[in-house]
Image (cartoon, rainbow, N blue to C red):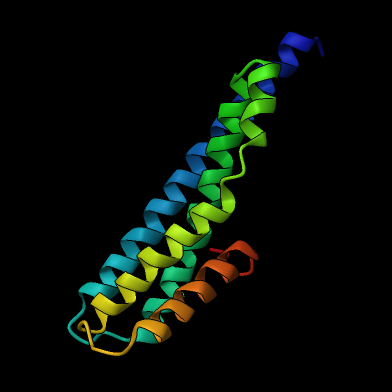
Length: 134
């Protein structure tokens, strides 16, 4: 196969992976929203669904970044992958999830540490790619 044909094939595969990841993220987010909208809220079920959303989000981010890098020049691609963003993104994500846990629990006083640790656990497990094979 010629180099140009290989590039077109690779680009199609990357676009397909990107679209699949986006759809999965949407499905998982809709499932979490449905769970949270129920009158009988189950925190364990919501946390499991949130873990699936986080895993789908990470998969989507990887597919997006890989597709974007494929479309860049070699120089731009090297600079793009050299940016150390994972730790900052994880810290922001933990903060956002901790706030979500707090709000879903009715904003109780004194739950900040527990909410933070739950959020850290979700982000850590989502990064381990161990959940939500649907």
